[in-house]
Amino acid sequence: FLSIINYAKMNGLECYVSTNFSLADREILDKLISLKLAEIAVSVWAATEETYCLVHNNKNAVTFRAIKDNLAYLNMKKNSHPKVKICNVITKLNFFELEEMFEFAIETKSDIVEFTVIDIIPDKTEHLLLNSHERECAIKSCENIRKKLLVKNKKMKISNFDLFIRRISNPDSEYGIY
Image 1 (spheres, rainbow, N blue to C red):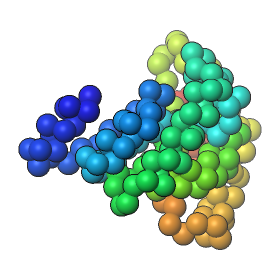
Image 2 (image 1 turned 90 degrees about the horizontal axis):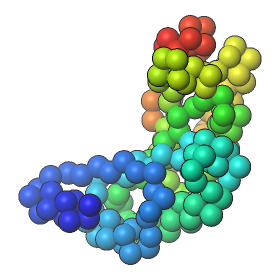
Image 3 (image 1 turned 60 degrees about the vertical axis):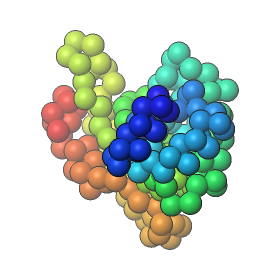
């Protein structure tokens, strides 16, 4: 995929990459930095090894630690680009780690963190939707994150945060209607 990015950049295109980051290594990261990507969006969905393994049942704790280490490496080595966004799809398997996900983004010195709701597949993934109690807990966590943002790290951006809060605040979100 690096040759494709290189070709696009040589032709003046701005490049964005979305990845689970599980196959990234230092060599790839150094190349991505040199290519001056606009942004890398990394789907993590967790702040701890346990939750990472729960939401990515084909991955393990070693993968999670490598992702965290590689994010820290990338953010330490780069100058202004690529921007690094941590993406978290929130479900009943991980909603209790919202605040820790925010802290994860700060610890890895990422530029942006984003939370979004799950889009269900009828008759397949409804069991991942938040119930009313879980939604209340998630909303409280969002309030705490907003307070932490003001105190801890003014450089950290939360993408579409108000939209996320509005969506989980909707009582119909228990049915996947946002």
